[in-house]
Amino acid sequence: MEPMKRDLIIKGKQIYLRPITADDTEMTVRWRNKPAVVQNFIYRRPVTQKDHEEWLANKVFKGFVHQFIICRNEDGAPLGSVYLQNFEEEHKRAESGIYLGEEQTYKKGIGTEAVCLIVDYAFGTLGLHKLSARVLAYNTASRRLHEKAGYAQEAYLKEELFLNGKYEDLILFGVINPRG
Ligand SMILES: CC(C)(COP(=O)(O)OP(=O)(O)OC[C@H]1O[C@@H](n2cnc3c(N)ncnc32)[C@H](O)[C@@H]1OP(=O)(O)O)[C@@H](O)C(=O)NCCC(=O)NCCS
Image 1 (cartoon, rainbow, N blue to C red):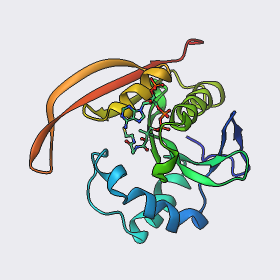
Image 2: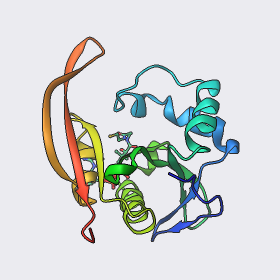
Image 3: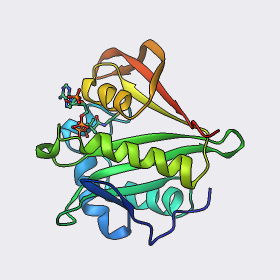
Image 4: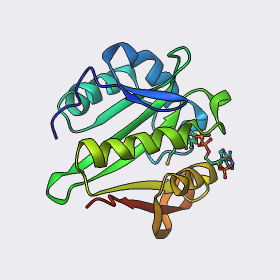
């Protein structure tokens, strides 16, 4: 995939999405390492500044990941990140992911709106056919969010992952481009 257009702004009702930049590194690493985020992610090791810089250089700036910062419309305050990764151009598919970095913003519909915006971008701008998302079964908020954003549960994988000394169930969600 071509890298994101650097001046792209995706506008929503409460929020807008802008492409992540190197200046977002400290904030993004802080968000990604918050316990509320880590416990809902499959990759559990702390993310260092160096890891993130390599991610930006090797994935985002080369177009293998399209990653956005979610910003509040009223004042531009950054709230979290939403992204597309694991592009399979042959099959016109990718995987979406999201985390909000500021817990006080939870349950206000921001997560759902951000995922709806990236789905529109994936289908409308990139012309993808399908997005998937992997959600730990205990993550009620993320399950609900994906259902509200139009994803359907496609698989329930029992005891798929060994996390923190325990086997955890994983749900695969998918959404298909209604325009083909
Ligand atoms: C998952 C996450 C993005 C949800 O963001 P959000 O802005 O709070 O989500 P929304 O406000 O759009 O809520 C979506 C639905 O989940 C529900 N919800 C939110 N938090 C919830 C919670 N802790 N428990 C149960 N339901 C919850 C909301 O009520 C809403 O459902 P409703 O409209 O039926 O009431 C956010 O909690 C987060 O960043 N979590 C940490 C990282 C993470 O889990 N990422 C996803 C990995 S797959």
